[in-house]
Image 1 (tube, one colour):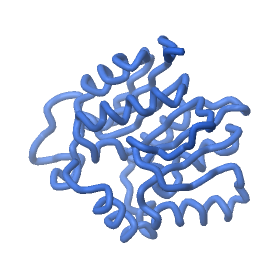
Image 2 (cartoon, rainbow, N blue to C red):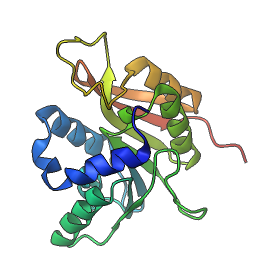
Image 3 (cartoon, rainbow, N blue to C red):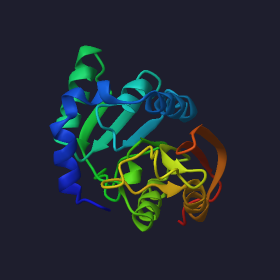
Image 4 (cartoon, helix red, strand yellow):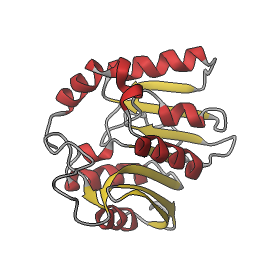
Length: 207
């Protein structure tokens, strides 16, 4: 991780009010695909990691039983809570949580885990640890939309900020999912440097 969790939280809180208006077409396309692939049933609980202002959580709330939205930035979560209140949604829980410690408590059921444009802030080793945490929730489906390389990125046209971001290759992420007992069932190429990866559980957690 190129910055500490606290530094990332402060940076995103500072730009929370204008965050939604600053995002690219690729970001919005990625978010739409994450929502489509998550496809929760009415009794599913969704954990959305790096939830930000709630793009994914708000998009899934009408179809799921509950969405647990976790982020490290209080400013971003306040924007998410405001938007949820404006839409009359009371089945989204915005609370502090990190990728490697989403602070769910021992009795929270999770059926689907989603994340959009957030995991790339972690190093590859930290991403693997985070994916292990996602798997340990017992979820049957993981849907990740993120900055990720299909091929060597053009150094003159990066889709990310090298000073704060640390994207992985798509292959690295696929390997991390399969190592945790998931089969990657779909990979959407939104951009040469943006992917949506869908993984379904094929190996049960040990009893």
